[in-house]
Image (cartoon, rainbow, N blue to C red; front, side, top):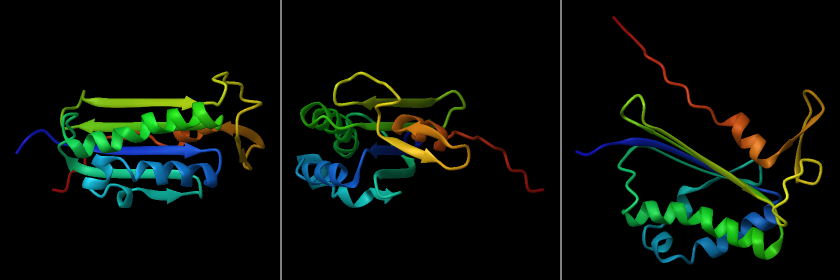
Length: 150
């Protein structure tokens, strides 16, 4: 049976063009191609890639897991080479109450994080600016609950 986890990954890009370039390169990875992983990603808000899987064996030695994880290194390479910004967040919630992984990072072309220079999302509710990583941190939250139906 094995240990199971719920996994959620989001990757935000500064624009759709950059996202499309990364997706095209991502599709060429041998593990991505072998397990047809490109089709598992959903596009949200025109420039955010999102993946989730419930009750899966998320082991680093599995090729398909390596395929999803490859997205993070590819995004970093593209950001360094092309000078655009991106951010990612991975949330993995295991079966045990204390088994929660929250991995996240952001990449700016020059690696100087300055909210004034970062590609921004307008937050119309309070007229403040939210960076790519802030958007992921604010919109991905772990909530555990217990439902009892007697």
